[in-house]
Image (cartoon, rainbow, N blue to C red):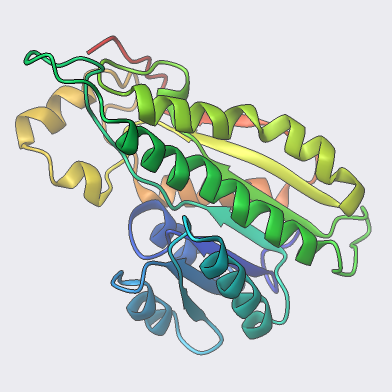
Length: 256
């Protein structure tokens, strides 16, 4: 699918990987709608992208808000042909900490609700909209790119909830691709490594430097545009479907 002329919905587009993707796809000629929380920078970023780009506010854990936002984005863009599910949260807590306190179940549920269920909710709603698009020469009507993490495969101590949520996103990639093939929709997943996002920027510099040690080559943090360029390739390459692509400079995480 060509990016130029595509109508792209980017969840989590108010910062980090989502923002980088929104900016790259817009620069390549797509019309972009950013879906993020009302208090995010999404509206400002959409305004910065210029005419024809939009912001829709929603909490992706609220199905009613998701329904309204996805439908609003489709109306504003004249349809949706690309969706990138970049909204998500991280969490770090031991199952049993040194004081004997248990990992709160409400936190576990909250992480899954945002990272996994929220991603699935947006996916199912955009897939139905994409199914009404006019197919291209390959019969393709839409492309969905979901976002997992290398923590889906090598979760560290304290990442039980995060790894479970991202593992779920990775695991549903192939079944989604098979399920939505009848609609002419491709589904792929990116599993980023350590990216230079606001989440990482808030860490102390010694911690940031220690994270670089797991990167084999190149020895730098991933950048939002590294991620965005891979999104663009996944959109444009018609034979990539049902795949989980690691974007991690050959990093393999240890237990800590």
